[in-house]
Image 1 (cartoon, rainbow, N blue to C red):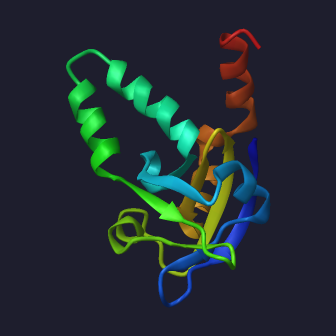
Image 2 (cartoon, rainbow, N blue to C red):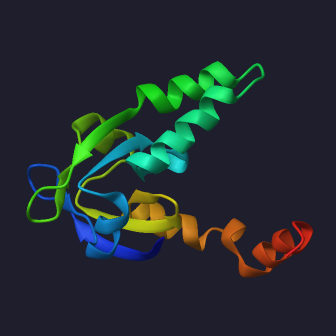
Length: 141
């Protein structure tokens, strides 16, 4: 399970270290995709297969747009012997990754964020613990 929050830096070649606690779950090769909220999603190959199948079974007027967003914005990445992965330039641009990044675990995937965007996201009022508690109650927790 991918959990936690880790701060890293991109190097001059666009590489970032994947937290050692995430490497076993992601595997030596994983799928990186553009995600929501201007971050990147990292899925193990098996989790990507599950996600891909869910996308392929979607119906409705926006299904094709959603499939195009995720499939065209995905690539397979390899973790090198030093635990780093190269983030392709178009992915760095999409997620506004410059130097400081935050890699967070979200159970079945990791997310890679620009540090400032992550800090803004978690300080946003929509991330308020009272609102989360209310939403959890509405969902039956």
